[in-house]
Structure formats: structure tokens, C-alpha cells
Length: 339
Image 1 (cartoon, rainbow, N blue to C red):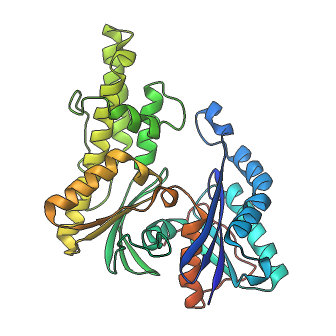
Image 2 (cartoon, rainbow, N blue to C red):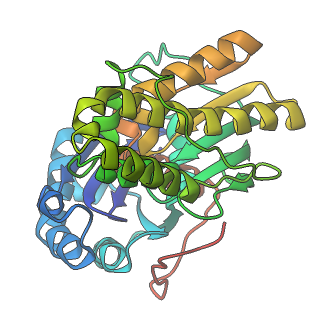
Image 3 (cartoon, helix red, strand yellow):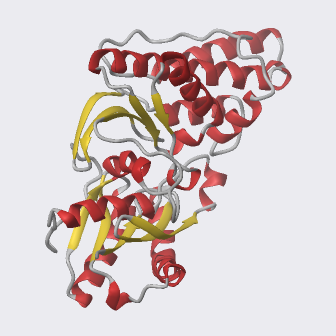
């Protein structure tokens, strides 16, 4: 039996979760609202909020799981990538707690954890099907967009990734051009449901292999809006729904084209999505429909495991625990880290 405490603090969510023998007993998240007024995450404010939240978040996760500190077998924490100040808070807390309890410390790569969110059991009976290895995963978050081949829980291979902006950045940056408040991605998804997907056409990059690019989309949208606003200053407000729908369709089309190419190249027909943007309803629907059309088995994680969360850190820590893959107290968090 193994009980793992997972701690996530890579950006602006402080989260802790308890995993027992591969099942998540609790997953508690404290979100930071202060960044909304600045139109994006302010790193210094994020790390200060983590300092305030970390103790009550961990305490709540333990209480919800019905687990005492003395029952914990190891502590897993996000070591990379992320905002360095935010990572430091979680790392130092995890180190201190592991040292005080005389238990092992486990360093977790944030993006690896997003992929493994797909294999978290959904409940006691775990009626929802889970992928078996090997499988492909499209990981889409605010700072990363990747296609990953998961050979096993701890053997993941990046087949392609963004060369500039990530899909999440594309949503938030274009939302800002439309005058939507931060975070804009969920609002684009909301308004897109009421708009015409084919109302406007935006440029799609032609990037070789399985890599992505989204920086050109922002430029394309900016150029288009400036041109239209010269004719009608209220153009954006009048066409908000259609603009959101067209932008969302463009981003999803780019993603789905690469997923289809990855399946063709690898011959693997089990495909997952992960990361914060995987909570986007338009993406989930398009992904599921593409899988149905081509006869793939597709998997979407529950919403609580899409955004940054302790559950994905805890499940990754569990598999590392089984392999005695521990780290020592000299480990340092890293803002950017290769797999």
C-alpha cells in the first residue's frame, strides 16, 4: 500500500491531492482571482498567494481524504516547468514536510502529469474506460501544446510541440483583442456556442511534422479586426459570437489536423487529450467526433483533472514511488525543463 501527497503550484492554482494505491481520495484546488484585473497572471502576486494558500490547501486535502500526516508514504511536487516563484513555494513546502516526516520526496514534471491525468480512476468502481499503453495524447495548456506518445506511465515521448505560442495562449490573446476579460479562453468557448463557425476565415500555419504554431493566428486576427474597425467601429461588439466561433474553429482545426497525422504515423488508435484547454467544450466535441469518424478510442479526463491540479501530481508520484524514483533535498525547481 502506498499513500502519496501531491502538491501542485506551477502557476496560479494551489492544489493538493491524496493518492492511495493509484486512486485519488481527495483533490482540492484554491484558485487565484487577483490576476483578472491585470489581464494575465502576475508572477509575484501568484507566488505570494501560494504562500498564503499552501498550508490550508494541504490540510484540507488530508482532511477530505481522511488521512493523517503520519500515514503519508511520500510527497510528490511539481518541479518543472512553471513560474519559478510559484514552483519554489510548492517545492520548499514539500521538502520541509518530507524532511519533518522522514519520508521520500518525488519530483514531478508538470506536462508528464497532465498526460497521466487520463489514467486516474474516476471513482470506486471506475466505470469510465481508461486508455491502455501505448496511447497518444494531445496536451493543450496555457503554455504548452504537445503530442505525446505514452509508452508507459514513466516513459513518455514528445512527438511534436509548439514552436511559439501554445493553444491556450492563442485563446487568451485573441480574446484580449476582442475585449474579453482574462481568462478569455473559457469565454471564447462560451460565446462560440452561439456563433457561426464559418463566419470568418483566419490563416492556418503550415508547420512540418507534428509541431504547432499559433503566433500567426493572433496577427491574422489583429490585422482583420483593425481593417474591419476602420469601416465600423462597433464591428467587434456586433460580431462577437461569430468571431469567437471562427477563432475557436481555427484553433481546433489546427490541433485536429496534427492529431490525425500522429495517428497515421504511429498506427496507434488510442488517443487522449489533456491540459487546461482540454476543458474546452468545442475541442472535446471535435476530438470525440474525429475519433468516432476514424474508429479511434478517444479519452477525455474529467474536468477536475484538466486544469492544474494535485491529483495529476499525486498519480504521477504514485507510479514513481513504485519504481523508487525519488529525489533528494538538493533538487531545485526549474521554469523550463526538457523531458
